[in-house]
Length: 228
Image 1: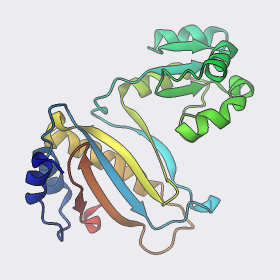
Image 2 (image 1 turned 180 degrees about the vertical axis):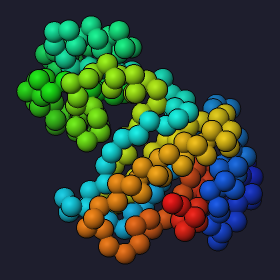
Image 3 (image 1 turned 45 degrees about the horizontal axis):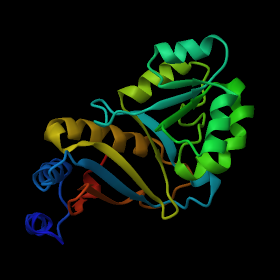
């Protein structure tokens, strides 16, 4: 571990679960890298991802964005192609992009959006887009007839949250340079969305633990009783 990381660890009481505002102030204080570190949240839920009725997945627009410029690929046809480009899409079209992905292993994009009439084309890409978390879905709002709106939201800082195989949600909530106020707004928005998405089948404690950390910094535990 480097000296900066060691110094950061000294600022954190390992046994303590911090209030969200205190934790966010600390995470900014412990972000000491030479680049603008991303702040991430990791929420462990009391659900079982293996059961369809306990899935937690959705999308939310962070009020202050993520601080990252995202490249958007839209699968569309007809007028929707130009609408997507006018809204700021980096790429828009049909089968030619599916072929490019399959034949050239092309992944110069961060978000994939599709109009419903293109599902036949992108359905064949499930095996390559799925493992990368890029497969469009109606639940995340990335399969929609209103592709222009979806592009605008993606560019504005819309993020998708979903469980991994250990029942944890990992999401960026901004950059260290945002400061505590903007990070708090993003944090509250994301946590609120996750709480609203609680499945009816979930029993017992829903939020088991919550940790925030900067790219190069140590994790900071949050008192989950103060969430929601």
